[in-house]
Length: 214
Image 1 (spheres, one colour):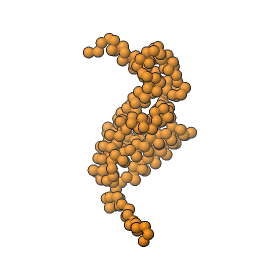
Image 2: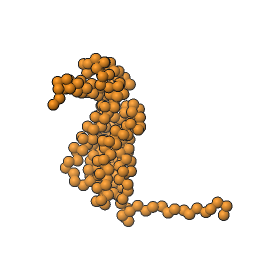
Image 3: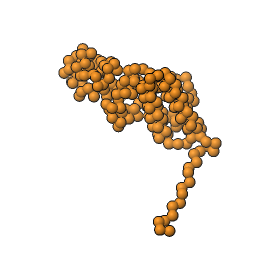
Image 4: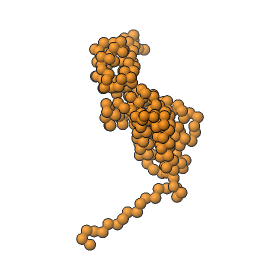
């Protein structure tokens, strides 16, 4: 059973994360200072450094929790769907809908790539979404709805395409229109994964190379 001190420590940490999310979502990472976050959380700057190494460390925690939340919210839209390919479509569509949220735009789509870097951002994204997307793709392959490709490769490519589509929405002058266009394009990409009439992917023939000098 947690002691009162443990509860106080965890409460302070949660207050810092919540305050950081509000600050990052409203002003952006660059315009937010450690002092801003501490003040918003109602704690001292020393208390912030007791829990986090600095502003970037706090941002990592905020982004990680936001990605978990987005994944849960996207999955919640698929509870009434049984076909694995429809689960995939519905989940991606829900994520693009969430890209219309200004806080999601600022933290997850605009600031995360530059603050975290490609490798760290990909690690977090993969941890929260890859397994579910890969499972839906594997089930769709088993059902004959997707060509027999490597599920891990297809999953990572689709996640990358969805992330780029969300960024297009976040940076568009007309976000609702960008949402419609990006959604239609992403859905078309998924449709293109269907098996060919021969129920397989025809591999290009290897051209036999002549030895040099002949």
